[in-house]
Length: 131
Image (cartoon, rainbow, N blue to C red; front, side, top):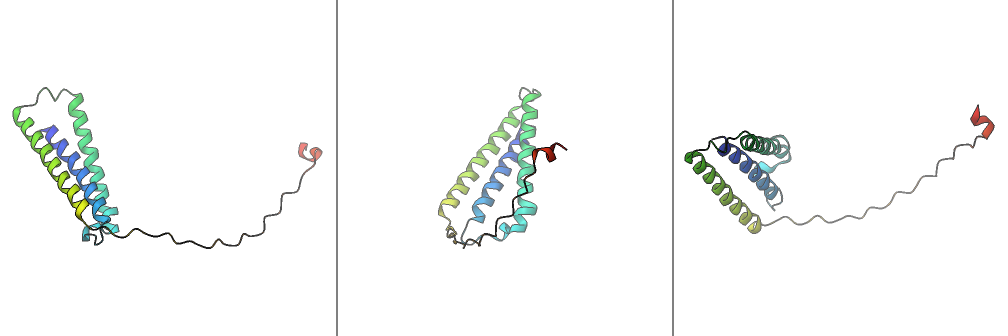
């Protein structure tokens, strides 16, 4: 069961991150891709899900939980992987078909006038430096 949960968290975090990236680049971004939502909720949630999912999978792989897997665990893992693949395919299709906003153009700025160079430090003689 741990491997199923770890795979679901890892896949969900990756998909959430990917959907957010696609959503912010659209011509009409969805309501949930505002700067505040992405900064305060979506990004921490995606990072937490990826970190927890990776941690659970690494823990299960290193502590011999793979040998103790039953057929129910394998079925759950296979369903989660298939669902993540199907959702990833749907997100990829959505990202190709959705209209993107126009690329930002570079605005040339006038270079400000350079101020006068600062006065160099006075040179100190060798005898004075030694003191």
